[in-house]
Length: 208
Image 1 (tube, one colour):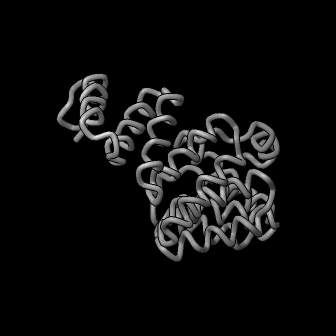
Image 2 (tube, one colour):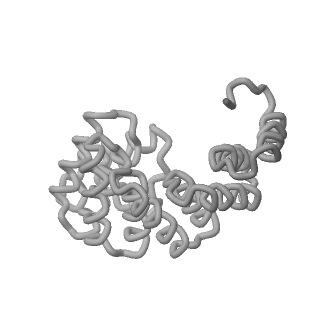
Image 3 (tube, rainbow, N blue to C red):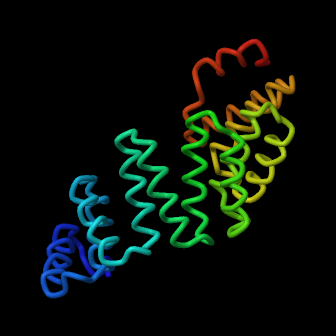
């Protein structure tokens, strides 16, 4: 629907008009929420998305978006709760499982993250963000070879996916493959990834 509009405000006004004529249409509320997210108006987006799930309690995508709004507020509990709700609505929807794993990784719980990521990848084996999350989890557990293998798989799938190059650099460094670590870190930076300054310092002695 949105592509018919040159102006986002016009699109929002039209959606509000549609909602006035049908206050129980979850799809209109959901689209309104996405439109407000495009404007980074998180308060209005949250209100619209909550209206969407009030009218359609199993609208998994809306719960995922609400979880994203929680992340903007650094509310990991809220993000986890909404994504668990999304996964309960649609168990085969890989995105909430990946988001659940993200929260576990932020909390330093790689085993819980791996369990969630395996569910995400069960339903979408090519889900690149989930694969990278799994690589991160294995790195956190000290399983550097597994991390490296996953990163290479991701890079084979999408060579410009910068986070995988960063994880590859970390995994190689901890396996004392310093030349490969330097090469991977440089590639991550070239692709726009913000490699940690401390890690770049660690790499300096190994640069030719």
